[in-house]
Amino acid sequence: MKKKIFTRFAACAALAFACFTMLSTTAQAQSPKLTDPEIASVAVTANQVDIDNAKLAEKKSKNADVIEFAKLMATDHQSVIDKAVALVTKLGVTPKDNVLSKKLNADAAKTRKSLSEKKGAAFDKAYIDNEVAYHKAVIGVVENVLITQAQNAELKDLLVKVMPTFRAHLAHAEMVQSNYGKHGKKMGGM
Amino acid sequence: MLKWYNQTTENMAKRWVECSTILLLCCTVALFAKCNDVPDKTKQQLAPVPPAYQVYTVEIKGMKFVPDTITVKKGDEVVFVNRDMVAHCVTEEKSKAWTSGPLPEDSAYLLVAKESADYFCAIHKVMKGRIVVK
Image 1 (cartoon, rainbow over the protein chains, first blue to last red):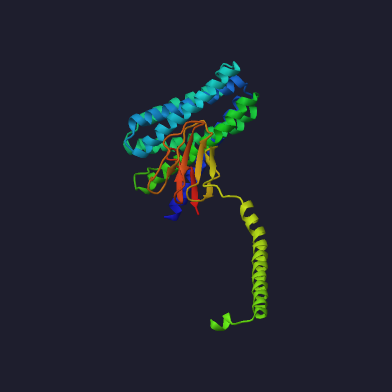
Image 2 (image 1 turned 45 degrees about the vertical axis):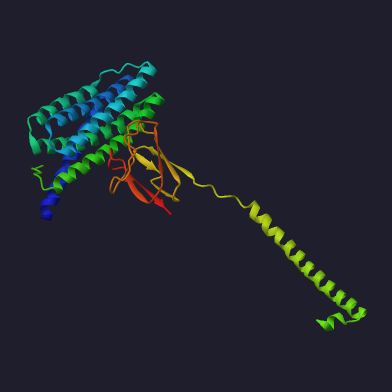
C-alpha cells in the first residue's frame, strides 16, 4: 500500500516537474525578453484561460465543491483582468500578442478539448488536477518571467500583488483535490 | 450627677482645660489624617479613566488576515478592511455565527467582539484568523 502511494506520489511529482520544466523552458527559450505590452497580454491571457476553464466546469460539473471553486476562479481572475486593463489603459499600453500568450492559448485549447470529452467524476478530477497544475505553472511564469522582466513599476507592482491570490487559489485547488480523494470517489490512474 | 454640681470652680476650670486639651488633640489628629489623605485623592484624580472600548484593525491583504490573531476585551470593536483586489469575507468558522458577507476591495466590516472565535474567508477557505476575547 505504502509502495503504491509512493509510486503515485513519485509519478505526480515527476509529472508536475515535467510540466513546470516544459513551461519554464518554453518561456526562456522562446521569449527571452518580453516588452511591457507583451507582459500585459500574457497576464490577461493567463487569467482569461482560467476563466474559460471555470465556465466549462460550471456547465459540466455537478459536484458542489468543484462548482464553487470554478465560480471563485471566474470571479477572482476577472477582478485581476479588470485591474490589469485599468492599469494598461491608464499607462496607454496596448497588450500585444507574443510567443508566450499564443502558447498559453494553444495549450488551453487542447486542455478544454480534453476536458469537454470527459463527464461526471472523471471531468471533476481532470478539471481540478488541471487547476492545480495550471496555477503552479502560471505562478512560475509570473514570478520568473513577468515580474523579472516588467519595466514599468506599476505593472511590476500589480504582478507582485497578484501572486498571493494565485498561491491561495493553488492551495484551495489542492484542498478540493485532496477532499476528492478522501470521499472515496474514483481517483483514476495518474 | 449631684457630685458634679457640687464641684468647686477650681475643679470645674481644671476639667474644662482637660476637655479642651482632648478636643484639641482630636482635632489635630483629624487634621493630620486629612492632610495625609490629600495626596491619595490627587493620585486618584490623575489616574487615566479607561475608555469604554477599544477599536482594533485587521487588514486583509495578500490573501491573509493581518494580524491573523488578535486579543481583545469583550465589547471591543474589530474593523476588517479588505486591501486586496479580489473580494473577501470574514465568517465565524465553527457554526457561521456571524459573517460580513462579500467585502469588495477597500471596504470594511465592523465586528463587536463578544466571545473568542476562529474565523475564515468563506470565499477563499484557506484564509484563516482568530479573535481571542479576554
